[in-house]
Length: 172
Length: 189
Image 1: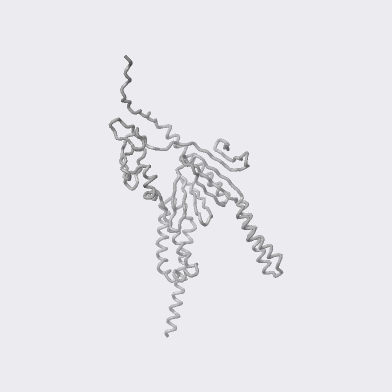
Image 2: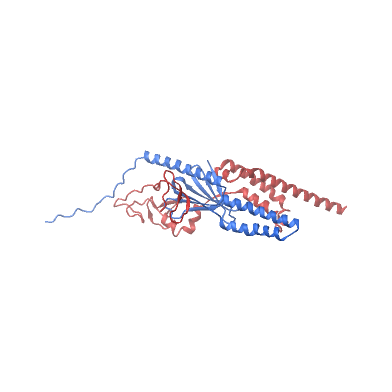
């Protein structure tokens, strides 16, 4: 049931964990993690989107593939050609990985909160799919249980405050 | 306005910007707040809800507050208004929850011997911090048994790799210590 989604970012290390009754956001520190818990019944919307990580693709091309091609074409020594080939293979592997995984953004909207909780990163597609399935199943289960609980309890009508103002004096 | 496909939501495409994504909408539940009692004419009333009966006094501002406004922090009752304004700096941290990560501390200690310059200090002191790291490891194992969240967060492979790292560092330290001892003794003799 529980599923964890961890960002790969160096500066903003976050994890989202799907628990039985809540979604937990962990802000990782060096010795402890800050825990924020969002109950499933508070969640009223989730948005998943996926886009190509353009910045990473460009960096990968500039730092791996282009230098690799240049080393292969401009050198005649076997060692340098092999290094260039290695760089190019690494670059191509990264390029394929970034293209397949994409950059996934998940926004979680909670009741009475204007700003969503947002997590963005490059995750394995299978992991995102499992996370989504577990999260949605958990929310649906929690909310149907809450709806059943609400239906079983009878709400007492609110008693209005006593009106003690004297009635108007009828005209003579 | 994007309309998610019902039931349960799913993939949507924005007709204007061609943005694609998945939207899931759920039922909106009312906030679970205790109903505050309405005030009678002789009752003290809440400063923020004039029709509600005051049930407590805010420990920060001294105002009468009703059960809707009352928030208990460290055994004292404060009004939500006070916590949001004057008490924000003082009590903002009171609502934070932290999960200790002994496994991260162990990794932090183990990494220091790989940093040039820092290793001159940390490697000779390995005989001090390795027992401490093993203590933290057993603490992590206990937390893993007791805390569901920690069990998910601490990967299973760390249970195996941490003692291996620590043992290797300990053996390396022991080897260097023996070599230094032998060198000193042979020089004396």
